Image (cartoon, rainbow, N blue to C red; front, side, top):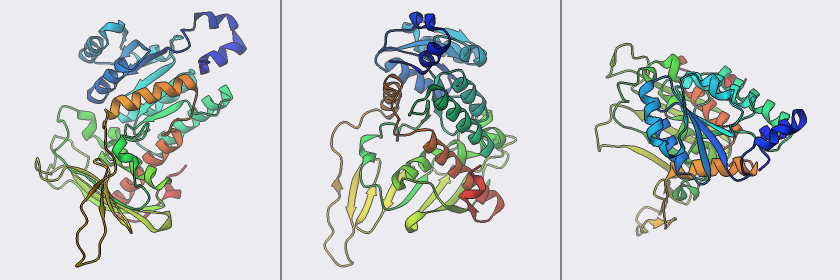
Length: 363
C-alpha cells in the first residue's frame, strides 16, 4: 500500500520508507471522543487490520473513554490535536469534533499528508468548505493521485446501508423529527459553533438526497425558528423547528422538515421517495406501487432482503479499504462539499426569508 506519506517521502528521504508499517495495516488516530466520536472509535477498533495509535480530546474523561474503547491497541492519549497531526506514523485520522473546528483540523491533517475521515459537515459556513476543499486539492496534487485523501463521514453513503441502495431517481421528501438534543452539549446549541441544526444534523439526510439525484440543489426556500424551546438551554440560538424546499435539476424537489418538539413515538426520521411509478421508503428498502384511484391496492414489495449490516462499521471499513487501495470513495470530498453547502443554502433561506441559489454559497 504506497501511502501518500510514502509517495512524498520517496522524493525527500527514501530512508523514511523503512519505518513504514506492513502494506495492509492502516495506522489510525481519532480527534474527538464524544458521542459521535465514541461510535467512530468503536468502528475503528472493529475494522480489520487497523492499528489505533492515538486518541485526542481536550476532555480528560473523553480521553479515558477512548483509552478504554481502544485498550487492546494501547493508543497514546493526547490533549492537543496539533501534536497528533505532527506525528510521522499516521496513515489516517478521524475527526469527530464540534463543527467549528472541522475546517482547521481537516486542512492541517491533509497538509500533513494524512488521509482524513471528516464527520459532516465540513464547517459552519462557505469559507470553511472552501478551506477544506482547497486543502484536499493540495493533497491530491502533491501526491499526483486520482483519489482525494478526504472522506466525509456519511454511513449512508460510504458503502450505503444496503436497503438504501435501491430506487433513487425520483421526487424526494424526508423529515428528521425527534426530541431535543442533549442539553449537556453546549456547543450544539450555539449556532456560531454548530452551524445551526440544519448544518450540524440535517447535512446527513441532505447528503443522501444529493446522492439519489447525483447532483446538488439549485435553490432553496424555507422557514423556521425557535417556537417552544426559547432560551432552553440558556443562550440557545439554534432552531427547534424548520422546513425547507430544495429544487434540483430536472424538476425534482426535496421537501425537508426538521422538528425537535416531536413527542416520542409520534414521527421520527423518515427518508422517502415519490415518483411516477410509486414510492420508496429508503431505510427499509420497501416499494409501494402507485395505482389509479379505485384500482386494487398492490402489496408493498421489499427491494432488499438480507443482512442490513451496521452503517457505522460498514462506513469505517470502506474508508480504510480506500486508504489501502488509494481508490476514490463513493462519498468523496466533492459530495461532502455538496451536502454542506446545501445545508448552508437552506439555513440562509430560512434566516433571510427568501430564495437562495447555489451560486450564492459556492465560493
